[in-house]
Length: 283
Ligand SMILES: NC(=O)c1ccc[n+]([C@@H]2O[C@H](COP(=O)([O-])OP(=O)(O)OC[C@H]3O[C@@H](n4cnc5c(N)ncnc54)[C@H](OP(=O)(O)O)[C@@H]3O)[C@@H](O)[C@H]2O)c1
Image (tube, rainbow, N blue to C red):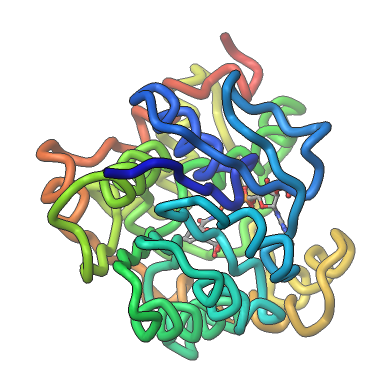
């Protein structure tokens, strides 16, 4: 029986929803965060200060936990982060990885996830790996431009992706953490279709009742934008590689894994857009 579950990345896109869903099921949850004082967590969740690369903080957070949700790769500097986290040892780990993890064409983040997956598989623990495609919520990055009525910068060309709703990813993470039948599985999580950025803009525009325009960025413009928003040159270079992979159709993949686990089809991008329309300036 699961007694307590540690969620890392607990204030983020997937982790916060994993926390909410675990709490709703009545599970006992501990949340790892760099700033417990600022973390907005449901009542009853124990917030502990830590960082996935500070292994002492991870070891203390894992003490007494039975299962852990691992969000341990934010860039090339995290190639060994999952190895550190699994060394702390719990009965079961569920790693949030990424589609095409380990494929060098997906850039340095993809390579780091490949190392992380290796560590998880070699850990001797019960493990489950989740490899989501692009999150539907990435288009929240469009919100400021959409609200202002200006074109949204688009670095992905017409690259199609099996865009997945983060709620589906979180629901599967919970099943993997507490349910039977998932240990040793690697799930590739996609939505039901492969929209291009132009398709997503058209869908979002329909949902909002106004036009959403994109402005294509060249690779040098993309690099400039990333560096200006605080990315290191190395990370920006890695990101450009993964952008090229997507733009060339490398991520135009749909799988049946969400339906296999949840017993229903994955949510569409349109559903996500309808449920988040307020973020774009229309309630
Ligand atoms: N976005 C996508 O389309 C996509 C697709 C496939 C896979 N993924 C993978 O999903 C993971 C990210 O999941 P997510 O979007 O749920 O996470 P997130 O929202 O970006 O971050 C989760 C939490 O981790 C902490 N955090 C953020 N950046 C950090 C950093 N650089 N160093 C240390 N802590 C940091 C923050 O918590 P505190 O401030 O509370 O500490 C944050 O709330 C990554 O491994 C990514 O490769 C993403």
